[in-house]
Structures are given as structure tokens and as C-alpha cells.
Image 1 (cartoon, helix red, strand yellow):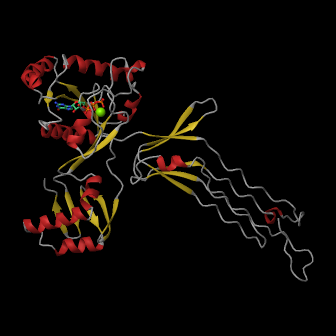
Image 2 (cartoon, protein in one colour):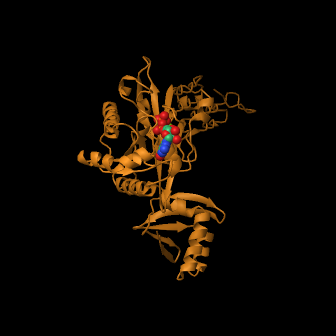
Image 3 (cartoon, helix red, strand yellow):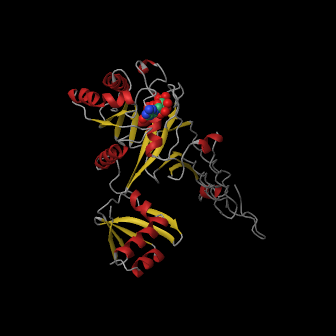
Length: 403
Ligand SMILES: Nc1nc2c(ncn2[C@@H]2O[C@H](COP(=O)(O)OP(=O)(O)OP(=O)(O)O)[C@@H](O)[C@H]2O)c(=O)[nH]1
Ligand SMILES: [Mg+2]
């Protein structure tokens, strides 16, 4: 509330400006954020208040929006009074966001209330109360492949063998307590494999570590069932695990699958390997015979996983038009986007460099690709969905991604 005060104006009019709106809080999915740990350290977040209005009809400034970055795959739940909760958003794609609480509207200053009748209103609004919310954030890992099997089957050993991830391996059950993700790279394709704890018969009733961790593979494109070839009956082991996965529900049991029998390096397993595959074949199952520890048969297995991930990726699960990716490279910002069936790379220096290269020669092209890789452009292309055989344009240069 304010009234104009000037010399020789004995009774100035009302000139109180409006208050600014309060800031909102937005959760934003950002691929550079990996965990919720950062957020977890602080418990209460508050966006900035709007400023007060002032005399001279000056409106108060709006409160700044508070943007909290979260990893891709974050679920936002609103906690209810009775402990119930409701899912309000899932932030899966890079850049997706959700306004979780809205700032209040700024109150009107007394200048707004002046009328021909009421020339000196002593009314000013209070600002609206901002929203408050009690939220639970839960991170579901985003993996393409989930490895499922009994404890000790060699799941973690396998993930170590096919990726740079280093989950703990030991000769006792339930070595893995938390899911571990590994990035598997094969030529132009990368996919993420999740190693999860082993599950045992009765897990749906809480035996062993239970089944709760299966939520981490709810969204995988396929499941890799890994069984220990040294077990008395590997097929029965598979059935046990399958039954538990079915109990868990949520479509995990119906996911496309690959079955692999592990530890064929052990002499007693090697000897039985034909018998084992035939046993599975009779049940209509094609299996891969591998040794995670001895790195046998893994090329074949990874090739099949990669192919299945690629096929599944064409369904509705993966966005067909990922948002343009920008990379900060030594030659400045480079942007990658889709352009009628091909991929376009923008960035002044990167494009100039490409146009200056003798791309008609194998050597020239190879050198350009080496640069693009070093600048992070290849990864950006891959993230944007580019695969072997796709065309890439840099200014007037057009290249095909070679395998
Ligand atoms: N001989 C042989 N041993 C293996 C192979 N793969 C794993 N092992 C051994 O089997 C044991 C269990 O391996 P892990 O990779 O920890 O098994 P896991 O399935 O991750 O087990 P949990 O995390 O407890 O569910 C370890 O002693 C490994 O060294 C293999 O291909 N050959
Ligand atoms: Mg393990």
C-alpha cells in the first residue's frame, strides 16, 4: 500500500504496485546427472519469493524458478496423507520436465483498487500462498538388457566381460546387492546392460533378496537369462527363475529373451555342453553356450543382444525423433539433428573442417571420422539414433556411416 507524496500535492493517489509472482519448482531430466544423491542431501527446496510491490506503481520482480536436475528415468511421486502415493510424472527423455509446485500469484497493490468513488483505497492484497508438496523421487534405471539368473550364475562376471563396469564377483550367493549398469559398445551401437541381484525360488514371497529389484529391469527391451552350466539341471534353474519373474508381473516375463548357459570352460560343463543344448532345444529354447570368466562365446552373444536391442528400439519404446544433441567440442558447439532420413551436423568449424577434407579418398574419410569421434560428434550421432548405413551431412559433405 502506498500513496503518492509530492510537494504541493496534499493528497496524492494510491500508487502501490503489485507483488511479483512466486517462483515455481521444476524438475528437469538431464543426461549428465547420474544419481539422485545430490538432491538427497538437501531435504527442503524452496523457490524464490516474488518481491513486494512498491510505491510509484512499481511491480515487484517475479521470484526465480528453481530448476532441479534429475537423472533420466526419475519417477516423481506425490506423497499422500495416508502414506499412499500417486505418480505424477516420469522423466525419461533428456530435457523433459515437470512443474512440481507452482509459485503463488503476486497480490495487487492498492493502485488497482482505486475507483472514482474510492480514491484512497487502503486495500492491498496479500500474495497467494505458493504450493507445497511432499515428493518422493525414485530412479528406475534405464537399461536395454537385464541379466536375470540364480545367484552365482555369473551375471556380474558376464557384465565385467562385456562392458567396462566393475561389479563385484565372488563365489557366494547374493554378491550383487544393488543393480549395476554397464555400457556395451559394438561398432556403431551402444546399449546398456543391467546386472541385478540373483533371485531364488520363493523370491516373490521375499526369499533371498526378494523381487523388488526387478523394477530396475521393468523397462528393458529384453531379458538375458543366464544359467550356470555346472548346475545339476540348468533347464530347471531357468524354469525357477522364469516362474519368479512371472510372479513379479508387469510384463517382464513377456519381454523378448535370450538364454545363455555359462561356465562352459569348466571341464565337466564342457563335456556336457551338447547334452545341455539339446535338453534346452527339446524345450524349444535356443541357447548360447558361453564362459563369462574365460570369455568364450561372448562375441556371438553380444552380437545377438545388439541385434535384438536394435530391433526392439524401432518399436514405441525409444523416441523416433530424439531431440537434437549439442556437444561442446574443441571446435566449438556442434549440433546433431535428423534431416529427411539423414543426420545433419551443424557447427561452423566442424563443417569447415569437413569441407576441407579430401573425403573422396578412404584415408581422408577415415581421418575425418577420427576427428568426429574425438570431438564427441560420433557419440552425439549415435545418441541421435544414427547407425551403420545412415547418411551424415556436414555442409556440402555427405558421408555414409561405415561399419
Ligand atoms: N569357471 C567359471 N566360473 C565362473 C564363470 N562365470 C562366473 N564364474 C564364477 O562364479 C562365481 C559367481 O560369479 P558372479 O559373477 O559373482 O555371479 P552372480 O550371478 O553375479 O552372483 P550374485 O551376484 O550373487 O547373484 C564366481 O566365483 C565367479 O568367478 C565362468 O564362466 N566360468
Ligand atoms: Mg552378481
